[in-house]
Image (cartoon, rainbow, N blue to C red; front, side, top):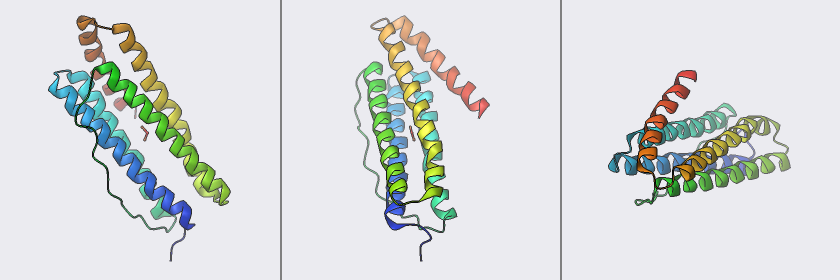
Length: 171
Ligand code: FEO
């Protein structure tokens, strides 16, 4: 017998899959950057993928804590081919905006179902999405400034590796 409201539990299980898909997407982007010898961007994407796994596991733990039942779903394959770094980060930003919409729909469902603990748990994700979108938008803006300048791109690549390492130290 589940301790959770069924529609909410189903929607969270769906979101667990969505977070794992995000990890898959960023890992695919990381592999692409590796192949392009942009190792700073590659490590940034790899760290981002790890962060997405922590998002999925937060929801996984939440369902278990509520006495619900985690049901893992099939994860779609991410794209295998990517365009320029700018296009990749535009894609990442568009993806994060979609995830934000998913989190907001989930929150609205929890509110409609009077599921107060889920609303509280989702507040962390609502705040996190503001940060996720800002981070991606900032990188898009910087890549727009870099334009076709290969030297500037290589400098930014070096910086991307460093920035991620700093963030992980703070965690
Ligand atoms: Fe799980 Fe990138 O938000």
